[in-house]
Length: 205
Image 1 (tube, rainbow, N blue to C red):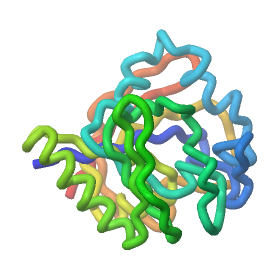
Image 2 (tube, helix red, strand yellow):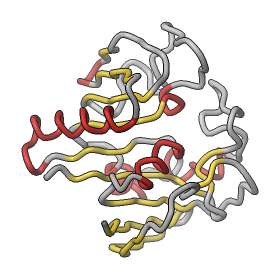
Image 3 (cartoon, rainbow, N blue to C red):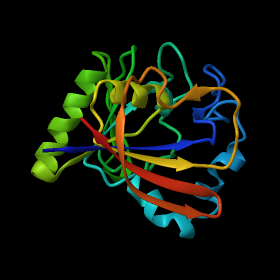
């Protein structure tokens, strides 16, 4: 059976992004203290190498449109993602969107496929690809953003949740578990470094 994981950075008060519509090309997580929020990820790489590595290496990915681009409405065909020419995924990525766009092949094996038929269709396509690539040991990763992750949690699609809790308070924004009724978790591990606490949970179905 394909295993479904999700990695998400959250603030101490449970927010994974700033207020909706505050995202820009310069502020991928919206109106928040990004330097404090993500310094473990970009400024303290050696101490958090295992957790950073856990966010990639899947056989297929699912992400929401705003994880790929800050744009709204029709796609800007000049925009190819936040990651430059060689995104870290190196596998098929299914982007849930309301607007059609042709698949976008990038260096390193990443191909973004834009799915307009809904989250469940994107998820099932990712599971099928992961199964084809790695058999029963395949892995799908829910790559964000938080709205997409919450929808996956509410639908019971996630097997393992990996939280990276930064010591910063947003006071508002887009919160993890909004609209997720009664999710049951079993703690697997906990590890702290200077700028973050890494929590891994098994989702009980």
